[in-house]
Amino acid sequence: MLSDEHYMALALEQAELAGQCGEVPVGAVLRLSDGQLFQAHNAPISQHDVSAHAEIQVMRAACQSTANYRLLGAQLFVTLEPCLMCAGAIIHARIQRVVFAASEPKTGAVHSLYQVLSDIRLNHQPDVVGGVLQEAASTQLKDFFKARRKAKKNTHFV
Amino acid sequence: MLSDEHYMALALEQAELAGQCGEVPVGAVLRLSDGQLFQAHNAPISQHDVSAHAEIQVMRAACQSTANYRLLGAQLFVTLEPCLMCAGAIIHARIQRVVFAASEPKTGAVHSLYQVLSDIRLNHQPDVVGGVLQEAASTQLKDFFKARRKAKKNTHFV
Image 1 (cartoon, rainbow over the protein chains, first blue to last red):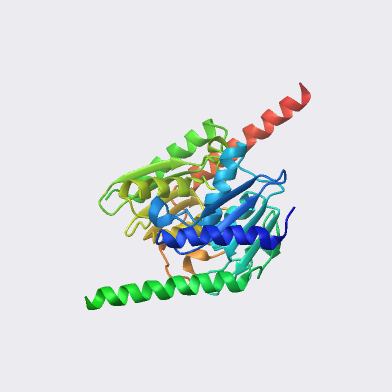
Image 2: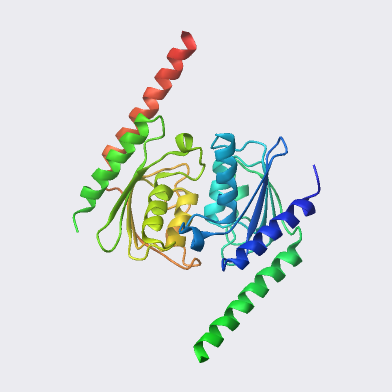
């Protein structure tokens, strides 16, 4: 298996694609235990689907491909700390290991606002690593929101 | 608008359908502010989709139909207290009101294990009503698990 940074770099490419579609730039890569890779990005606006965060998109693709709603032994790489919805899905899928880049202080459910993935009352606790390529992910997000604010401002004064 | 019991009875019918497919019997009904209704049931096993809980299924259907990832003014009726994943999605969708039947002591994220829908740190708090047709929903779930245990036991001794 390649390094965490390798898979996170792929996730950052997915996040870039999301940003190009006007979606908040978050990308995810899922690696099954047999080495199969799935890649997806945040797409709720374009897909008309409130649940279409990058993590759910990539887990759904892997579930469809393996014809199984559980993804035992899988590793998930995502550019932003998962929210409550995605953390819940990660537990349902029995993901073995979660690697994320930037923290999300307002809504993060791994270590910021909630600590869902280490809650021993729930029936699964994946291994978790945070901060992998954090700088690149944070910059990508900041640049996206800066450009969006600028675009809105320009629209306002036209 | 009809009574909460009316919509919950429809959700219980959906839960019954889920049970007939071998899925845990949970059903949901979503009512948009214009009166449009959507109905769905729990289907992760049959749909090969870890996110296919009744609530996500019905929200996704409504999002697709309205071409909008937010469901402002919508009311969600579900036969079991939503889990973390579904509670997170409810907030993302800005559901106005959530009505559920039975509580889920082990994984419920509305009032049992977590109180996500009343967390003022998050940017939306729907109105919540619990316990509507609770008895019927609890009986449905108990009967399902009892039958499943019996089937497993019989298989074991054949």
